[in-house]
Image (tube, rainbow, N blue to C red; front, top):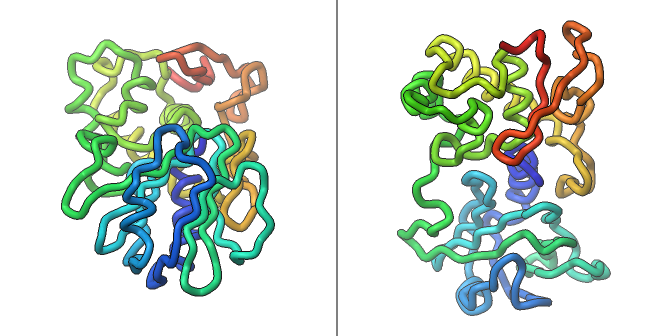
Length: 270
C-alpha cells in the first residue's frame, strides 16, 4: 500500500498542474471504488477552481470554494495528469477534466482507493481524531513518550496508530525502529523518553529522505510521471528477512505484530 512518502510524492507531482485551474467536468466510469462516490463530485466540483492541493495522512485533498475532493490511493491507485485524449486503460476509473485540455486520471486496478467529498468548514469523518503529521513540529519524542505511558502494545504497533501520528506505515515504522535501535516487540510503555526522542527524529529523517527518493516501489506504486520510487534500494530492515543486516551481519528476523510483518535485527535493536 502506498505510504506517506508515496502520497506526498503524488501530491507534489500533480499540484502544479491543478492549482489555479478550473474543473470543467468529471467523468466517473463506475459509481464506486472502495466506497460509493458521493454525488457532490459530479454536481459541485465541475465549474470550481482548484485553490490548493494538500495531503492529510494518506489522503490527497483537492480544495475548491465549494468543498474538497478527498482521494485515497488504496493499495494500487495512481494519479496522473494527462492530455484529455490519452487512450483509456482498463482500470482508469475517474477523470477530473481541467480547463487546459488535461485531465487528472485516477487509475486503481484493485479498487481499494476512494474518492470522497468534504463540505467547506467540515472535517470528513475519516480525518477526525487522527494524530499530527510526522513532519511537523507537533510530532516529537515528548509526544510519543507521553502517549505511550501505560501502553502494553508493541512500540511498532503504537507507532503505526493513526491516533498517535498519521502516515507512519509498515515500511517506514520498520526502518525508523531499526535506525533508532529499538526492538519493535518492546512494549511501548517501556521505551524511555530519550529513546523516543531518537525514534521521532529518525521517523522525520527517513520520511523526508524517502520523499526525495520518490517513495518505495512495492508491487504497483508509480509516481505521477510514471517513475518508480527508489527508496526500496536503501531499506535496512523491511522485506529483508533472512538477509544479513547491513550494519552487523546478523540475519534479519521477521515477526507478526498487529497482523503486520515486522522486520528487525536482533543484534542492533534492543
